[in-house]
Length: 303
Image (cartoon, rainbow, N blue to C red; front, side, top):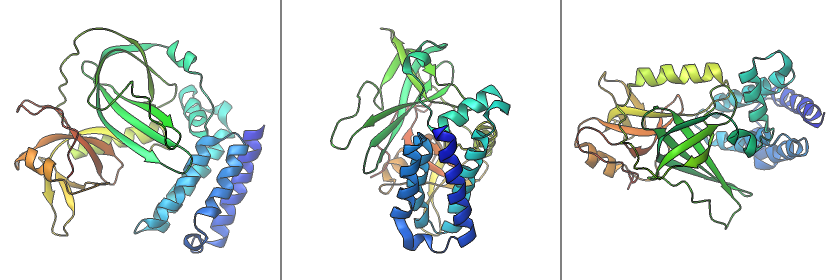
Protein backbone atom coordinates (compact mmCIF):
# COMPACT_ATOMS: atom_id res chain seq x y z
CA UNK A 1 0.00 0.00 0.00
CA UNK A 2 2.77 2.45 0.94
CA UNK A 3 4.69 1.66 -2.23
CA UNK A 4 1.57 2.09 -4.39
CA UNK A 5 0.66 5.42 -2.78
CA UNK A 6 4.23 6.65 -3.07
CA UNK A 7 4.41 5.79 -6.77
CA UNK A 8 1.11 7.57 -7.40
CA UNK A 9 2.64 10.68 -5.82
CA UNK A 10 5.72 10.17 -8.00
CA UNK A 11 3.57 10.06 -11.14
CA UNK A 12 2.04 13.41 -10.19
CA UNK A 13 5.54 14.83 -9.65
CA UNK A 14 6.69 13.52 -13.03
CA UNK A 15 3.66 15.07 -14.71
CA UNK A 16 4.52 18.40 -13.10
CA UNK A 17 8.09 18.25 -14.46
CA UNK A 18 6.83 17.78 -18.00
CA UNK A 19 4.05 20.36 -17.67
CA UNK A 20 6.37 23.10 -16.36
CA UNK A 21 9.27 22.10 -18.65
CA UNK A 22 12.82 20.97 -17.96
CA UNK A 23 14.52 24.35 -18.33
CA UNK A 24 14.24 25.35 -14.61
CA UNK A 25 15.76 22.08 -13.31
CA UNK A 26 19.46 23.08 -13.44
CA UNK A 27 18.61 26.12 -11.31
CA UNK A 28 16.59 24.06 -8.82
CA UNK A 29 19.46 21.60 -8.44
CA UNK A 30 19.84 18.75 -5.98
CA UNK A 31 17.26 19.85 -3.35
CA UNK A 32 14.48 19.56 -5.92
CA UNK A 33 15.27 15.90 -6.56
CA UNK A 34 16.22 15.08 -2.97
CA UNK A 35 12.75 16.05 -1.76
CA UNK A 36 10.91 13.53 -3.95
CA UNK A 37 13.63 10.92 -3.33
CA UNK A 38 13.03 11.26 0.40
CA UNK A 39 9.33 10.64 -0.19
CA UNK A 40 10.21 7.41 -2.03
CA UNK A 41 12.27 6.28 0.96
CA UNK A 42 9.23 6.89 3.15
CA UNK A 43 7.17 4.89 0.66
CA UNK A 44 9.59 1.94 0.91
CA UNK A 45 10.81 2.34 -2.66
CA UNK A 46 14.57 2.86 -2.14
CA UNK A 47 15.47 1.74 -5.65
CA UNK A 48 13.41 4.56 -7.13
CA UNK A 49 14.91 6.98 -4.61
CA UNK A 50 18.41 6.05 -5.78
CA UNK A 51 17.48 6.77 -9.41
CA UNK A 52 15.99 10.14 -8.48
CA UNK A 53 19.03 11.18 -6.44
CA UNK A 54 21.26 10.43 -9.42
CA UNK A 55 19.25 12.60 -11.83
CA UNK A 56 21.08 15.88 -11.10
CA UNK A 57 24.17 14.21 -12.57
CA UNK A 58 22.36 14.17 -15.92
CA UNK A 59 22.27 17.97 -15.81
CA UNK A 60 26.05 17.95 -16.34
CA UNK A 61 25.76 16.16 -19.67
CA UNK A 62 26.17 18.06 -22.93
CA UNK A 63 22.69 17.10 -24.15
CA UNK A 64 21.18 17.04 -20.67
CA UNK A 65 17.50 17.56 -21.65
CA UNK A 66 17.60 14.41 -23.79
CA UNK A 67 19.37 12.39 -21.08
CA UNK A 68 17.09 13.63 -18.31
CA UNK A 69 13.91 13.01 -20.29
CA UNK A 70 15.09 9.46 -20.96
CA UNK A 71 15.60 8.85 -17.24
CA UNK A 72 12.26 10.40 -16.28
CA UNK A 73 10.51 8.22 -18.86
CA UNK A 74 12.18 5.16 -17.34
CA UNK A 75 10.93 6.08 -13.87
CA UNK A 76 7.43 6.60 -15.27
CA UNK A 77 7.54 3.21 -16.99
CA UNK A 78 8.66 1.56 -13.75
CA UNK A 79 5.78 3.14 -11.86
CA UNK A 80 3.26 1.97 -14.45
CA UNK A 81 4.76 -1.53 -14.52
CA UNK A 82 4.41 -1.76 -10.74
CA UNK A 83 0.72 -0.98 -11.08
CA UNK A 84 0.33 -4.04 -13.35
CA UNK A 85 2.55 -6.51 -11.54
CA UNK A 86 -0.04 -9.27 -11.63
CA UNK A 87 -0.16 -9.10 -15.44
CA UNK A 88 3.59 -9.31 -16.02
CA UNK A 89 5.64 -12.46 -16.71
CA UNK A 90 7.21 -13.84 -13.52
CA UNK A 91 10.78 -12.82 -14.37
CA UNK A 92 9.80 -9.30 -15.45
CA UNK A 93 7.68 -8.84 -12.32
CA UNK A 94 10.71 -9.84 -10.23
CA UNK A 95 12.80 -7.27 -12.11
CA UNK A 96 10.24 -4.54 -11.41
CA UNK A 97 10.25 -5.39 -7.69
CA UNK A 98 14.03 -5.32 -7.71
CA UNK A 99 14.14 -1.92 -9.44
CA UNK A 100 11.58 -0.51 -7.00
CA UNK A 101 13.68 -1.77 -4.10
CA UNK A 102 11.66 -4.62 -2.64
CA UNK A 103 13.91 -6.52 -0.20
CA UNK A 104 15.01 -10.04 -1.10
CA UNK A 105 16.35 -12.14 1.76
CA UNK A 106 19.88 -13.42 1.21
CA UNK A 107 18.81 -16.77 2.62
CA UNK A 108 16.20 -17.09 -0.13
CA UNK A 109 18.78 -16.30 -2.82
CA UNK A 110 21.29 -18.78 -1.38
CA UNK A 111 18.56 -21.44 -1.24
CA UNK A 112 18.07 -21.11 -5.00
CA UNK A 113 19.96 -22.85 -7.83
CA UNK A 114 23.73 -22.41 -7.96
CA UNK A 115 26.19 -22.16 -10.84
CA UNK A 116 29.49 -23.80 -9.98
CA UNK A 117 32.55 -22.42 -11.73
CA UNK A 118 35.83 -20.60 -11.32
CA UNK A 119 34.73 -17.00 -10.97
CA UNK A 120 37.27 -14.33 -11.85
CA UNK A 121 36.75 -10.82 -10.45
CA UNK A 122 37.78 -8.83 -13.52
CA UNK A 123 36.85 -5.27 -12.56
CA UNK A 124 35.14 -3.04 -10.03
CA UNK A 125 33.50 0.37 -9.77
CA UNK A 126 33.02 2.38 -6.56
CA UNK A 127 30.17 4.86 -6.28
CA UNK A 128 30.07 7.40 -3.44
CA UNK A 129 27.24 9.63 -2.30
CA UNK A 130 26.50 11.46 0.94
CA UNK A 131 24.84 8.53 2.69
CA UNK A 132 26.37 5.32 1.33
CA UNK A 133 29.33 3.94 -0.57
CA UNK A 134 28.59 1.20 -3.10
CA UNK A 135 30.93 -1.16 -4.91
CA UNK A 136 30.08 -3.45 -7.79
CA UNK A 137 32.57 -6.19 -8.62
CA UNK A 138 32.15 -7.91 -11.98
CA UNK A 139 32.88 -11.62 -12.22
CA UNK A 140 33.22 -13.96 -15.18
CA UNK A 141 32.75 -17.72 -15.07
CA UNK A 142 35.78 -19.39 -16.68
CA UNK A 143 33.77 -22.40 -17.89
CA UNK A 144 30.17 -21.16 -18.02
CA UNK A 145 31.03 -17.79 -19.62
CA UNK A 146 28.41 -16.24 -17.33
CA UNK A 147 28.76 -12.66 -16.11
CA UNK A 148 27.81 -11.76 -12.55
CA UNK A 149 28.00 -8.70 -10.34
CA UNK A 150 28.63 -8.82 -6.59
CA UNK A 151 27.58 -5.73 -4.62
CA UNK A 152 29.05 -4.37 -1.41
CA UNK A 153 27.86 -1.42 0.66
CA UNK A 154 29.51 0.65 3.39
CA UNK A 155 28.71 3.89 5.24
CA UNK A 156 31.16 6.75 4.64
CA UNK A 157 34.41 6.14 6.52
CA UNK A 158 33.94 2.37 6.84
CA UNK A 159 35.66 -0.33 4.81
CA UNK A 160 33.95 -2.52 2.22
CA UNK A 161 33.52 -6.24 2.69
CA UNK A 162 36.76 -7.62 1.20
CA UNK A 163 35.60 -11.19 0.59
CA UNK A 164 35.46 -10.45 -3.16
CA UNK A 165 38.15 -8.19 -4.61
CA UNK A 166 39.21 -7.34 -8.18
CA UNK A 167 41.84 -9.79 -9.39
CA UNK A 168 40.58 -12.56 -7.12
CA UNK A 169 39.53 -15.99 -8.44
CA UNK A 170 36.84 -17.90 -6.55
CA UNK A 171 36.06 -21.52 -7.26
CA UNK A 172 32.60 -22.38 -6.01
CA UNK A 173 28.94 -21.47 -6.27
CA UNK A 174 27.18 -18.27 -7.26
CA UNK A 175 23.46 -17.84 -6.60
CA UNK A 176 21.67 -15.28 -8.77
CA UNK A 177 18.88 -12.96 -7.70
CA UNK A 178 15.53 -13.46 -9.43
CA UNK A 179 14.50 -11.31 -12.38
CA UNK A 180 14.84 -10.93 -16.13
CA UNK A 181 18.33 -9.92 -17.22
CA UNK A 182 19.57 -9.84 -13.64
CA UNK A 183 23.29 -10.38 -13.02
CA UNK A 184 23.48 -9.71 -9.29
CA UNK A 185 24.66 -12.74 -7.36
CA UNK A 186 25.78 -13.93 -3.95
CA UNK A 187 28.75 -16.17 -3.27
CA UNK A 188 27.74 -19.48 -1.72
CA UNK A 189 29.97 -22.52 -1.18
CA UNK A 190 33.65 -21.98 -1.88
CA UNK A 191 35.86 -24.89 -2.93
CA UNK A 192 39.55 -25.19 -2.16
CA UNK A 193 40.49 -25.89 -5.76
CA UNK A 194 42.81 -24.34 -8.34
CA UNK A 195 40.69 -22.04 -10.51
CA UNK A 196 40.28 -22.77 -14.20
CA UNK A 197 42.09 -20.50 -16.63
CA UNK A 198 40.17 -17.44 -17.74
CA UNK A 199 39.88 -17.30 -21.52
CA UNK A 200 37.61 -14.62 -22.98
CA UNK A 201 37.85 -14.05 -26.71
CA UNK A 202 36.10 -10.70 -26.78
CA UNK A 203 33.32 -9.52 -29.07
CA UNK A 204 32.90 -6.88 -31.75
CA UNK A 205 31.00 -3.67 -31.15
CA UNK A 206 28.17 -4.89 -33.37
CA UNK A 207 27.81 -7.96 -31.13
CA UNK A 208 28.00 -5.79 -27.99
CA UNK A 209 25.14 -3.64 -29.30
CA UNK A 210 23.08 -6.74 -30.06
CA UNK A 211 23.69 -8.10 -26.56
CA UNK A 212 22.73 -4.76 -25.02
CA UNK A 213 19.51 -4.68 -27.06
CA UNK A 214 18.67 -8.17 -25.79
CA UNK A 215 19.35 -7.05 -22.21
CA UNK A 216 17.11 -3.98 -22.51
CA UNK A 217 14.37 -6.13 -24.04
CA UNK A 218 14.50 -8.31 -20.92
CA UNK A 219 15.06 -5.45 -18.46
CA UNK A 220 13.93 -2.06 -19.85
CA UNK A 221 15.68 -0.23 -16.98
CA UNK A 222 19.13 -1.71 -17.61
CA UNK A 223 21.71 1.06 -18.05
CA UNK A 224 24.94 -0.93 -18.24
CA UNK A 225 26.21 -4.32 -19.34
CA UNK A 226 29.49 -6.16 -18.76
CA UNK A 227 31.31 -6.81 -22.00
CA UNK A 228 34.72 -7.98 -23.18
CA UNK A 229 35.48 -5.98 -26.31
CA UNK A 230 38.18 -7.01 -28.75
CA UNK A 231 39.60 -3.71 -29.95
CA UNK A 232 42.57 -1.38 -29.86
CA UNK A 233 42.73 2.05 -28.26
CA UNK A 234 43.11 5.06 -30.54
CA UNK A 235 43.04 8.81 -30.07
CA UNK A 236 40.51 10.62 -32.23
CA UNK A 237 41.01 13.84 -34.10
CA UNK A 238 39.05 15.56 -31.33
CA UNK A 239 41.57 14.38 -28.71
CA UNK A 240 39.18 11.90 -27.11
CA UNK A 241 40.06 8.24 -26.64
CA UNK A 242 38.23 5.52 -28.56
CA UNK A 243 38.25 1.76 -28.99
CA UNK A 244 38.24 0.51 -32.59
CA UNK A 245 37.42 -3.11 -33.46
CA UNK A 246 38.46 -5.22 -36.46
CA UNK A 247 35.48 -3.95 -38.48
CA UNK A 248 36.72 -0.38 -38.05
CA UNK A 249 33.86 0.56 -35.74
CA UNK A 250 34.79 2.92 -32.93
CA UNK A 251 33.22 3.74 -29.59
CA UNK A 252 34.30 6.32 -27.01
CA UNK A 253 35.94 5.29 -23.76
CA UNK A 254 33.92 6.72 -20.89
CA UNK A 255 34.69 7.61 -17.29
CA UNK A 256 38.47 7.77 -17.64
CA UNK A 257 40.08 8.96 -14.41
CA UNK A 258 43.33 9.61 -16.25
CA UNK A 259 44.90 9.15 -19.65
CA UNK A 260 44.87 5.50 -20.73
CA UNK A 261 48.61 5.31 -21.43
CA UNK A 262 49.03 1.91 -19.71
CA UNK A 263 46.25 0.54 -21.90
CA UNK A 264 47.90 1.98 -25.01
CA UNK A 265 51.28 0.55 -23.98
CA UNK A 266 49.78 -2.91 -23.42
CA UNK A 267 48.17 -2.90 -26.83
CA UNK A 268 51.32 -1.93 -28.72
CA UNK A 269 48.96 -0.78 -31.44
CA UNK A 270 47.39 -4.24 -31.67
CA UNK A 271 43.92 -5.42 -30.58
CA UNK A 272 43.45 -6.62 -27.01
CA UNK A 273 40.48 -7.73 -24.93
CA UNK A 274 39.21 -4.80 -22.87
CA UNK A 275 36.64 -5.48 -20.18
CA UNK A 276 34.27 -2.75 -19.08
CA UNK A 277 30.73 -1.52 -18.66
CA UNK A 278 28.87 -0.93 -21.91
CA UNK A 279 26.25 1.81 -21.71
CA UNK A 280 25.04 1.96 -25.29
CA UNK A 281 26.94 5.21 -25.86
CA UNK A 282 30.40 3.85 -25.13
CA UNK A 283 32.51 1.64 -22.89
CA UNK A 284 33.83 2.40 -19.43
CA UNK A 285 37.08 0.37 -19.46
CA UNK A 286 38.00 -1.42 -16.24
CA UNK A 287 40.64 -4.02 -17.10
CA UNK A 288 42.53 -5.92 -19.78
CA UNK A 289 41.72 -9.64 -19.89
CA UNK A 290 44.17 -12.50 -20.52
CA UNK A 291 44.56 -13.66 -24.12
CA UNK A 292 46.62 -15.99 -26.32
CA UNK A 293 49.29 -13.32 -26.77
CA UNK A 294 50.56 -13.74 -23.22
CA UNK A 295 48.65 -10.89 -21.63
CA UNK A 296 47.50 -11.41 -18.04
CA UNK A 297 44.65 -9.79 -16.13
CA UNK A 298 45.56 -6.12 -15.76
CA UNK A 299 43.42 -3.85 -13.58
CA UNK A 300 45.48 -0.64 -13.74
CA UNK A 301 44.79 0.62 -17.24
CA UNK A 302 44.65 4.38 -16.72
CA UNK A 303 47.53 6.58 -15.62
